[in-house]
Amino acid sequence: MSDSPTPSVPYRFDVDSNVAALQAAHGEIADGHETGQTATIAGRLMLKRDQGKIVFGVVQDSTGRIQIFAPAKTTPDFEGFAGLNLGDWIGVTGEVIKTRRGELSIRPSAWTLLAPTRRPFPDKWHGITDPDTKYRQRYVDLWVSPEANDALRNRSRILSLTRRWLEDRDFIEVETPMFHHVASGAMARPFATHHNALDIDLFLRIAPELYLKRLTVGGFERVFEIGRVFRNEGISTRHNPEFTMLELYWAYADYHDVMELVENLVSHLAMEICGTTTIAYGDRELDLSAPWRRATMIDLISEHTGLELSIDMNRDELASLARDQGVEVKDWYGPGKLILEIYEKTTESELWGPVFVTDYPKEVSPLSRDHRETPGLTERFEAIVAGRELCNAFSELVDPDEQLARFEEQEAERAAGEAEVMGMDRDYVRALEYGLPPTGGLGIGVDRLVMLLTDSSSIRDVVLFPTLRPEQGIEVGGSHLTDEADPEDDAGAEVAEEPT
RNA sequence: GCGUCCGUAGCUCAAUCAGGUAGAGCAUCCGGCUUUUAACCGGGCGGUUGUGGGUUCGAUUCCCACCGGGCGCACCA
Image 1 (cartoon, helix red, strand yellow):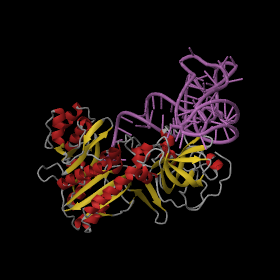
Image 2 (tube, chains in turn green, red):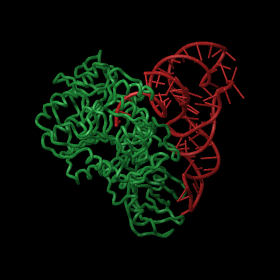
Image 3 (tube, chains in turn red, purple):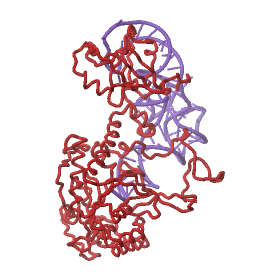
Image 4 (cartoon, helix red, strand yellow):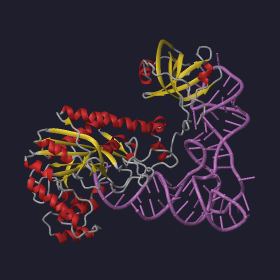
């Protein structure tokens, strides 16, 4: 790090173009041609080739890279320009020309240092390879890793396109609480926190579902929320403790309607982002064009194992079939849970998709409406795309008594030893008592959708700042857990395990 | 959480297998070069080898613990 003081730099700078615009306007001119047109751009100096009486620089802005052709004879403060460091922010004004070797360039008639870098930039060829450094110092990674930059910018586009697509279909975006008194709407361990003034424990939401359906009760017929949810579980290439969920509720629709919505939305996004619905993911191909295959869970199990299962089968018979497939059977597993276990063990990992896996057992679907034809099943589906669950959706359970009974079954499972069950939410039941119309609901893991459309193998490649352990040897901010000075409790950045 | 692999200069990597005072390229600094393309050429600066212990005459290298990370499994979206 340089110990020289920061030189004075301007408070603002006017640009009148950017790299992409210059390339679009002048990219095709002949070698050696001078356009006679002047442009002002700004960005970081990423490469520099000092040739003595000519300096070639390469400036990168958010749209690309362009060469700066700086001869000693015409460049103001040529020595200063030659002395710039890689990574310095500069503004450049000059004529747009193409060099004899055919490189579109700006020949500066003026240039300004906008911000010096006091730390050396990573190797100009290799960039950053250490994943830890990439994620911790994303502000550098974004400059030196084009693939990271592209994926993260595409994330923004995907969110924007999704909002527009839904709004075009009369869905309105809402924001529901992130602090929940009961962590419900999904089966996951929550993060706990505490509100001092109210002196109550709160949970960061694990899903917005129950609040969104309250809004449907309230007459918001088409709503969606795109927001962060928090689950206190392991971290992996597919899991970040905070991740983004798209949830949507559509009054008067059922799960068939939602399937159509999903395949149309996803193929639209693929078209916009990838330019095609036949995309590459890893070393395989995937055809996202609608319609996607629909198949029931039980049929898919039959396809992959030859087992002809039914939700009506005797529990012990299913348990023994499950054991045959290597499922570790717990006492409280009923027929529905056993079928799900068999599906996950034998079939799910074999699917590539896209395919809608439909008609989940009621036992494992506490918020889904009973199947209109087959008792014991629900009108629920998940989409498997590129071998992974992309979404979870159903015809919503509308009956308050039934919902209360489902919650109570969950409580019973918790008592029996199941760690992750859905929490009881009595106010939600009360809302249902006012009447939830027939409603189709959907949850999409946005991070995984972005992974799919950007061909990313790790969720960390599509999250700007993934959750990491605190870095040692650098100050990352102290604890603010206590509102009063409490030297006993205020040790570093530790997070208390139990709210106080 | 368990298993496994990794951590050497600001960045990218050598040296570790078979222990003998840590090297290179880039960046940075100095000098040269009027059409370069990761420019090139010459020179300089830069390391308590993640941290702490142990074995040894001697540890980047072997052993232990801890810290951080990758991958796999488990859990999920």
